[in-house]
Each structure stands twice: as structure tokens, then as C-alpha cells.
Length: 228
Image (tube, rainbow, N blue to C red; front, side, top):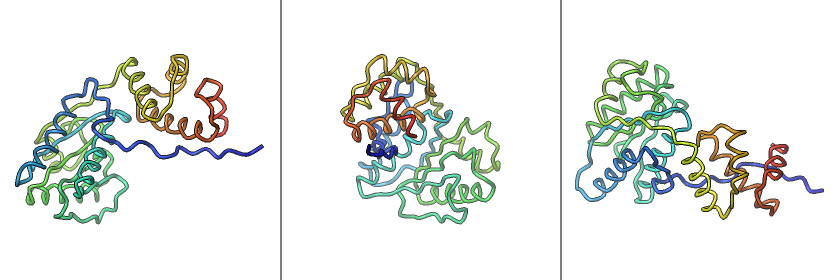
């Protein structure tokens, strides 16, 4: 019997179009407006936008979607994460910068983030930042914390179970998959209900279905999990 090696495959590229906004339509509209304005004006807006939310709420999807949208136009943005090198330099050719998961930045990276922020303002570049809570509650160096809180702040709201089901069904449909109601019930009762956990699971199901040429059923999912 052939041994099947399971991996999660290639996830769908994060875009604003495949982000299920639900109760978070305002932040998606704000990001779309920035992309539109930056493409139709001679100068860049040096806005500051902070997106707060729990793990799996979609923060990374949104900033990755911005990077993807700029990349399609031949532009780039700098992204500073907790695992970035502390000596990362600011690049004036960037169209914007992202400071991701600022709540997890250590002291050297907070220094780098502050440097990027100051340079972004100097070069009239937008700053998009994400964290697990609003800036006023962050434990960061004060000059960085106050700057992060000086612009537009969005708090991502959790999706309802019904909305999560819609996201999973729509995402599965984009991959050519069908998720029956009994499969959705099984998944939502046995796995974490945040999309940050469910979307990689859907990618794994897609990849395993392609390998085995089987429909997605509850026995199918159990078989896949046994091979993880």
C-alpha cells in the first residue's frame, strides 16, 4: 500500500476579497480606501492604522492582503515581526510599513519599530500595525506606544458560528471542495473555531483530498488526522 505523506499544501493567497468581513467591514473598507487613494494620488498618505484582535481573528490576513495588493502593482512594503532581525533597516522605496504583533516585540525590535515609524513619517509612508489589544493597553516603550495610538484604531470582532460556517463553505468552494453540514458540525465541535486554526485545516483537507481522490466526509477527516 502506498504511503501518503500529508502536508498542508499551499494556502490561498490572502486578499481583501477573500477576507470574510462580517462585523469587521469597516477596517476592510478603510484598507481598500487607502489602496485606492495611494494609487490615484501623487503623494502617499502617512496615515497610521492599528488593527487589534485575538489570535486567529484575521490580523495577519489583512496586512498580508495589503502586501499582496501592493506587490501586484510592482510595489513593496516593509514588514517587521517578532522574529525579524533587530538590525532590520528601513527602506525608503517601501510604499508602507507593517509592524506585526507589536505586543510580542522585544526591546531591540521595539527600537527598530520606533525607527521605522519615524522614517515612515519622514518619507510620508503609511504605518499599519497589529497587536492583541489596543495601543493604550500595550506594554511597550512609551514613545512607540503613543505613536501607535495616534491614528485609526480597529478592534476585530469574532465571527459567529454561522459566519464561520459561511467562511469555511465559501473557502472550500473556491478550492472545488464540498463541505456537508455534518462535516461542518464535526469540524466545529472538534477543532478550535478561530479561522487562524480552521483555514490551515481546510488547506490540509484540500491537499489530502487531491492525493486520495476522495470526497470529504467524517471518516475521511479521521483518516487524515491519523496520518498527521
